[in-house]
Length: 401
Ligand SMILES: Nc1nc2c(c(=O)[nH]1)N[C@H]1C(S)=C(S)[C@@H](COP(=O)(O)O)O[C@H]1N2
Ligand SMILES: [Mo]
Image (cartoon, rainbow, N blue to C red):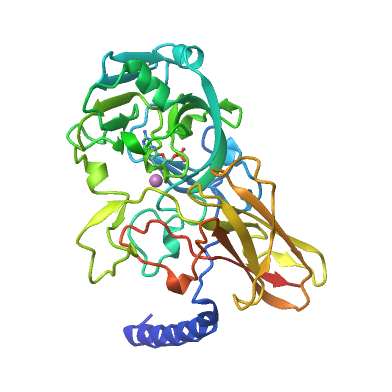
């Protein structure tokens, strides 16, 4: 293409985009994030996933999986920071070390973990803080996750508190640093270590060795991982091998430089004017996602359609999910499941309707939690440069035929 022609085409495309955005304006310029291709290469213990990288493995769960309260292990998303994750774990030799400001240093084997402590279970959503990042405008840097960097599982393990009690906290103990078995990319680069304030860790925080009744899949942290219900999963350390108790925050690389949002009331900033101070992302905000139908589905005129999906928040609990079939002008309440998995798990929802008109149709879902917090329209989304905590109203575009 000659240069002149390129400019002509560019101008035309820009014109078309402007037209498109005026149509989308009514719903706050929502842009569906959908239908990324699943890979034809399967990773161990995984069904086809959306693959962003294979070293380290970055695998996203396809949207259609989000119709059930528990996400199957073989569809559960995968995120690692370091390219060199261990490829072999000797379960007889694997230990978790607890050291630092403790009365008694512990090295806990898997057998001891399963036999010497009370065993507990919790159903909880695990979501990466960068989930849905690609829906932000302008697009922040980082992995361009669609909607599926999240999942919900029934986790079984031992309370972190019981482990710390066994070690005995010394006076002045305020923080723990937690670390997995993988190595940094080079020996001089920082490892993936997370720091947690002891007073923020309640009885729901567990060291888990099972999800959904089975061993953890290798890529999800076999043989043990930390589970911190209600909190984004950056600190849910996988292949957990070291817990160090300390008296102060250590300013480790991944604490000071990742998983942070602007430290102001709206947690927002602009690309031109970055916030001077940041804070950890921490508790999850309210969100819903349509699992069925997925974008591009052809639905038959006047047939019975049941929209299905999941909703969750940081532990306050879901109050309602509403569906809009008219670009966000009116909303109708969906039916929620009985919520027996508890306040940290997905609530599934269902909403039946019969399409009355041929052509393109937009389906939207919006969750409200028990604190009255509501998923915002895309136009109300607060931007941050890390692309964290996106929770805009979900949008799926289908076709009635
Ligand atoms: N050891 C270890 N644990 C880790 C990470 C990591 O890179 N190494 N990444 C964290 C991040 S950012 C996320 S989103 C989750 C992903 O967990 P999953 O792969 O089981 O979905 O693991 C967390 N725990
Ligand atoms: Mo993450």
